Image 1 (cartoon, rainbow, N blue to C red):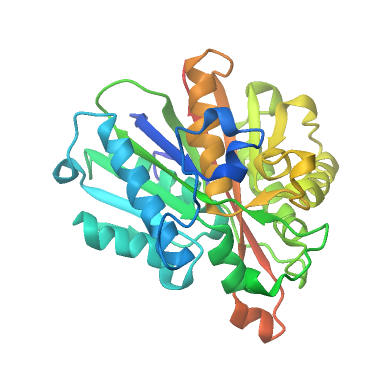
Image 2 (image 1 turned 135 degrees about the horizontal axis):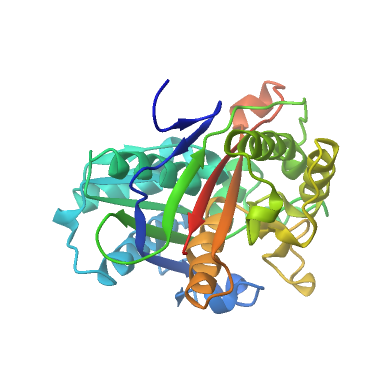
Length: 336
């Protein structure tokens, strides 16, 4: 059996990579939400002076990457690999940034789970001595996601209360063995789980079974319980999916209690009218690279399990009547 494999789906790192730098950027709606104080850069105009939302998202992503590099002594040429993904067709935000950066690029698509998937893959590369420095970054944009997955906002379509609001923002982190920062000690890569949900306004419910499956597998693989973590951070299940997730985990024999927080459910304040909460690649990414990292440095959290979820569907699959599959990946971040 592979020496760094633990149980069925978890990898334990012998030389845990460190997150030596993180950077976050978001728009004014995100600034006014519950995580606003943890965001490094606020852009007053989400369109970023661009003609399209897609180009604005690309600009956000490129800027946050540069801001993460600026927090270190590293140059673009020092980064061995850039791992990135987003929600747009052919992950165009990430790939066009890769074109402009000139860094070897590994494009991924885990939908809203892309940040944790990237952290896990990057940690494998650093721990295995395949790379010295790896950049992980992701982004999402409300206007661009609405156009792709639902309707252009110009049509003024009314959102259902079960729908979630795509976070406009981007986040980046740099993994290496050198320097100081919270360590990535474990990654549990999840399986695709599909219980037949077909409504795109119930994405939290579609993803909750995958989140429960990965969390329970992580506990079994590592012989841990909720009590071993200061925080179990999911994202982005929203208020609908969060309750289903808690119920499924409880049925499996685990009670999360106050250990659990969901970035989707908590991202926006009630008066912001964001339906069931936040979503998008930037939702959990801002939660990890902003909220978690900053609170770790303040001493509030020492060991957390971040469980990122993604809805693996597209306009094409929806039009063909397919159900929405879910995925969830879990990463342990330790600052002890």
